[in-house]
Image 1 (cartoon, helix red, strand yellow):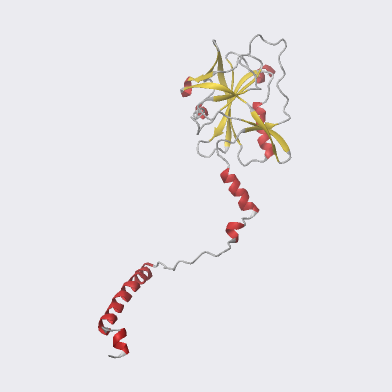
Image 2 (cartoon, rainbow, N blue to C red; image 1 turned 90 degrees about the horizontal axis):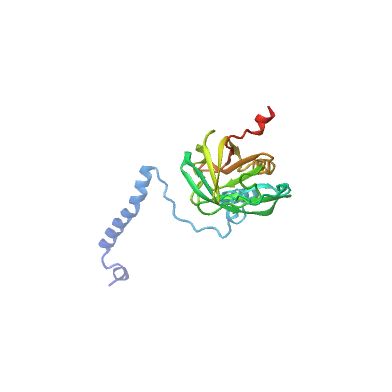
Length: 253
């Protein structure tokens, strides 16, 4: 026997199998060509990729912005804000908020004291107020107690951790807010509502927004959360006055 017959004992069958398998291999290419699909064999990744290992400063900043929690960004105010002066004479009891009820939006929630962290942003020291990570509103513990001259400030999440202030944007002037402390109830009436830009704004503008939570000479209740529900780009501010009490603007008139 010749060497060719040993290498290919059935030449006709081999050629037939080659033609069959070759047709099968060409079939996906022909289908892709007809459909306009380019079939490219996979390539091994290069050993070094500058796009992955060395992002530009702008891209890195974008990554950090995307990584920032949408709702957990605390309320900021300048660290140099003067602390609320203690009243003279000091009252026998400070009525600390313990519960908030707003019938217009079917809200009934506990209120807990919250503190702040001091941190540096650029060359500015700021206070970053904490927010309860459960279904509760947070009372800024340096703000005024109930029933006293000053600004009683409450914050709360609106799309995570129980969404205590989810429907705050639905409030309108004239709606009532009931604040409980011990056996006392304090009734407030919504007078003002503001939606102000916050996320991505300059630091100076964000710190200027803190004027709504700073001490005041008049008695008021301020509620603060983020807005809107899906992006949290703004702050929602609701201001209420004790029932039957005129605002300072009316007094000035």
